[in-house]
Amino acid sequence: MQGNASITINKNNLTGEFVISDNVNLNIKNSNEILLWHHFPDTAVITHTFPNGKNLDTYKFNKTIFGVKGISYNIAVDSCSNVLWGLMPEGKSDINISNSTIRSIGLWFKGKDTVNVSGLVNNVTYKDYTAPLDDRNLHFYNTAVQTWSLYTFQKSFVNVKGCIVGEIGSFGKSKVTGSGFTVDGSG
View 1 (tube, rainbow, N blue to C red):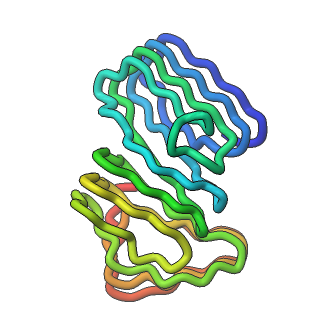
View 2 (cartoon, rainbow, N blue to C red):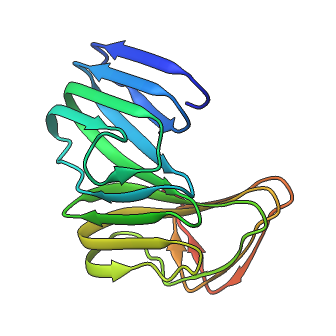
């Protein structure tokens, strides 16, 4: 979802995945099997705990929530089950997540970004960890991450070393190089 899109869903058994960005409005009620990808642009400053999504009574995520700055979208979830959390942080974002279980993180590299990526490994629970990325702050406290993925756009350049990630996507004139890494398809 991008631009000024709006989606309202009520009573769906297999709802699916949503990448949420820009000024969109997403409302989901009485549904299950949902993966919500929260795009965090370079302006995002987030300090947040994602709730357990197994049986979720209510969840809201927008700029009026304490600890959420630099986004323009609105997410409202009501009486849903099996809700999973995805993050898509860009360079210059400042993201601090605690006491959460994250299904997937898809790191975005845009513009003329040049970044070395190392040490990201799928299926890890972090007690207190800052991802070794020069272009953004991504900090986890008591948080599990099932899958890491890397997405390069425009003219960005990423060198990957010593990682186990789910998938890597390269778009536009961007480039990905690397050694000693595994792409396991879990993305």
